[in-house]
Amino acid sequence: MRLIVGLLVVAAIAPAALIGPSSAAENQPDSLLVSDLRSGTSFHVDAAKGNDNNDGLTREQAFATIQKAIDSAKDGDSVLVWPGVYTAAISFKAKAITVKSAADPATLRAPGEFAVSFATGEGPGSVLKNFIIANSRMAVFVAGASPTITNVTIVHNEYGIGAYGSCRPNISSGIFWKNTNGDLFQCRAQYSCLAGGGQGEGNINLDPLFADPNNNDYHLRSQRGRYWPQHNVWVLDDVTSPCVDGGDPSADYSGERKPNGARANMGAYGGTAYASMSEAAIGN
Image 1 (cartoon, rainbow, N blue to C red):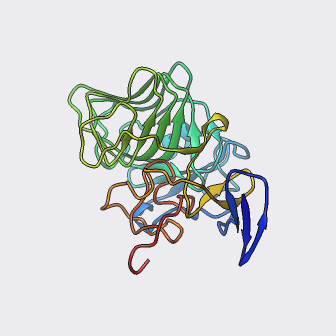
Image 2: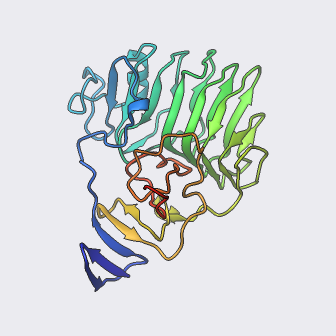
């Protein structure tokens, strides 16, 4: 591959060209958009350094588990989840809160369980955003609720999202891939990539071209640049994922690194500083 630092181009060994170090600040929730921040309290979760005996009000005092943060939150609050793998199932418990990744998206895994549950009458104000959900019995279980689920990458689960009873979850800008028994049950998505296809405006069923799924890297390949977390650099690929610039056209894309095509990507990284780049749109 080619290594690009400033204007210097040299040879290197890898499947892409290196652009240079990430400009993302390690200890700041740089992927958060103003529209994501609730008027209430923000609780932090950090699997590596957190402790559920903390108050959760800063990253330094983060909780260790997402459920502890949800339990502590009230309507209008936010739960900011720092990078890591979280293995406990979570339930929103009827709270109108936003639960989202604070930086490079976190991974939720709950083998044999529902990774995320909305089963207590949650409405559109209950928001799940910017997560990878993998290796669970069901990624998201919805019963009698109508939450907002956006920019999730749901891969290698037994089931994707299941909706039961009187509910209408708002699902958009997701990627559903290699879920053994299917992606969506009694619900629809829009502006999403679905392995088995599916009705819904803007949906596609093309290979999302993940960077390195065998090593749990679900960033989208891009000829204009994608983030390589193992080395904290941006690289250039030989191909571009069809999920780049494929998210909901009404979604805020301003958190994505430029050039961003003036449209958010599908998947967990969409709308964040870790979204793969694309050709610049006019004025971008």
